[in-house]
Image (cartoon, rainbow, N blue to C red; front, side):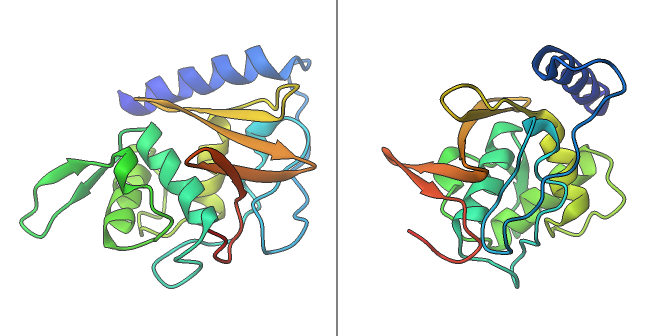
Length: 177
């Protein structure tokens, strides 16, 4: 049921925001390099060509912070050592891809019925998530409409930014505090 709700939300968001004739899609974003989350054209297909995030790959980065914002928006759950589930909260968004983020990513992948439920954010996982992006708007804002919350990113000159406190920081794969 959750997956069907996501598909309906995606269809509405794409139809409402794209303003394109049915059947016309923008090409995948061309990566400006392996160091930042980027995109061009309509936001709903920006992330399908992104790099990998995991406990072993770009584990401390603002790109990880961007992914954690998706987990928060969708109300993803992480499992503790006793097997109890807990909701991924705003306080869990710290830019560190640790065991909690890996567990919540597996939960998210299972809820989205992805083929690989491995706790690694790669092209399939990023590509599924970008279907719920809307924008960019005139001010560069891009919204991710999650099942629980809506989060906002900025995309300026093709580069994504995440909010850290009151400042916007580049969603880079290397650590940029």
